[in-house]
Image (cartoon, rainbow, N blue to C red):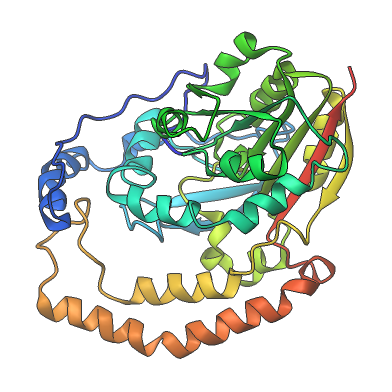
Length: 375
């Protein structure tokens, strides 16, 4: 998911107008955005949250328990975020959930704006991951005619998957302008910008494969997203889903430093049994479940980085109060992160050495389901 989420009816959240400074230096861009952010924060963060709910959004149970309290560990935007867990079905969800203004505020400059270049570089260099995902479909559909990638961003998955499925027409759907740029650059045959549940009736029965990679956890209503996928698929079509695994052992061992919690962007974290059951209710048969293949071996590295980043003086950002960091604070940050290098290296080695056994050890941080629409 690469833009502000949608409201309960699927209407995209409004985007706050921001100063445009093409070609400006990063400090100049930050300085230009500072008044906008400070105005947003003038009355606190309460308006960024909906009222707390008393029941589970997945099964409706009123038996909830606190799972996690944390802040924004990546951008360091103000606010505190709570994840509750359902005692009955184990679903984990943000509570209170971000409001539409909150989604706009916390997504802004994460995937786009100040964060666009950084994340575009990350997504554009994961060809191996994209091939791994695409290969999971091959035994069940050798040459699908039409494939829709939901939450496609800039279409990098589709561009790579075309190498394995050269006869397949790849379309993409996203809330951000990245999907339009992806079509312009030829990564997508067609790019659809908007809410999937709202667009699904216009796409009904058009696809042999619908994929959702690390998309469902961003959704305000996963049930509607799954129903939309069923509508877009032809009978016999395949739905490919990959999401963080909240039952990963590292989720408990690392606490708030476990990267896939990703607060405040991740709103729902679904245990695999829940997703399998829901797919069955919608008329799907799960034909493949994977844990080792979608595992990304970065848990300890990411936890160490988040910890050291939290301890170090923050880099300048327009949502932070006070004067921009001077030379002393910048030097202190650089020295602390330099001192952390041995720990980061050891964490990287441990992640990679233990990756082959992640599924058996229960430390795989994601799972993947492939389900066939039966009717």
